[in-house]
Structure formats: C-alpha cells, structure tokens
Length: 231
Image (cartoon, rainbow, N blue to C red; front, side, top):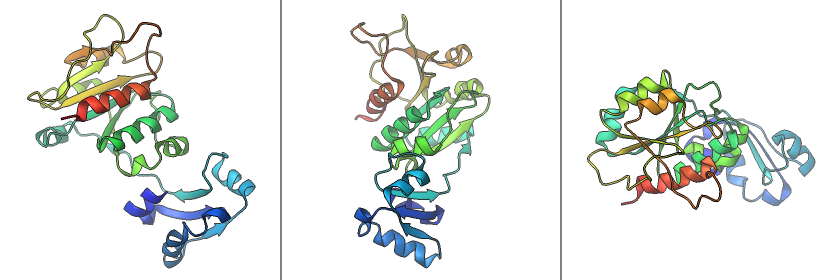
C-alpha cells in the first residue's frame, strides 16, 4: 500500500484500517481527504470482509490496478541497448506465483516483465498484488500477442534462453556477454509450450540433486533474476 501512495496515489480510491495502524496511515488519510476520497477505521472482522481474506496486515487500500501494456518487440531493441535484462512468463497459471515473481523482479531491479497470451496465463489480480507486497508498483507488466513470434524477434537484440527440464545444458552465467539475457519460464506443470521452446535460441536447466524433479517456478525465477542481474 505504501508503494502505491509513494508512486501513484491517485489510483487509491478508498482506505480501511484497524486501530493499531491509525498513526501509521495518518499521512495516507490526509492525502485521501485532500482528494475527497473516503477512509475509515474498522474492526478486524469488517476488514476481513473488505479484503476477502484475513491475510491483510490490518490495512486495505482499494485501488485501480496498473495497466497491463501491449508488448511491442521493437521496444526491445532500446531496452537491450540500455543493457536491461528481461524476464518472460508463458503460462504461469497461479496468481500467487505471478505475485511472487513480480516481488522478486522488483527486489532485483527488473522493472519490466512480459507475460504471454497463453490462455492459462495468470493476470494481475487481488491475490497477485497481495503476494507481490508492492512489487507491482515497480514492475511494468506487458502482454505479448503471438508470443512465440515475439520471442523470435527478441533474438535480434537479446540472448534468449528458455528454461526446461530434461537433457539440456546446465544454466551457465547469463551476464557479461554481448547481449543482455531474456529468460523464459513456463507453466508450473507443463513448462514452456513446444512452439515457444522452438523460438528460443538456447534451452537450459537448473541442475539439482535429483531428489525432486524441479523447483517451484517462483523459486526458479528468484535464482534466474539473481543470475540476470549480478555483475
């Protein structure tokens, strides 16, 4: 919530809070009062109903979500020239995983994320925003139509690496090459679709002990984000 007020307070429409947070939310309430927008002290039970969950931390802001922008592959040339790594998601279905990945991206300074037109791809939602802990305020989400074709065009300016299980090379160092990395993650159960795999310039896997098949996709994203941004 603090991130929304810091970056784009006009998106906040209403604010509800418990007594224990009265002092902390005072500046936010003052801002809403100036804009003639409502805010209210409520009991926990009412706040649970407003939030739709007891997992709210005692403060709930009702705000307009940030817009998901259409992805234009031509923009990638400029991003690559600026040395910006890119993380792409194709079919990540669980909004909690999406939120966790956005939080990770914000932590590592990845300020843009491309999601696909996969029918199962999770979109920004209340649950994703809650898990992201303010990350959506620092990460712009783009949605790419004809995703595989967009991935192929990325290869003009990015080192495009798809992640997959199986007999693929172990993921090596992603930074330090002539092109910044663009790394793709696929669906939690099925991985990247076949058409997307064919569009990648490289396929790689994270080697593990073999005791379990794979990591949760959000954990994988955290490792990849560190690899993509380390000096």
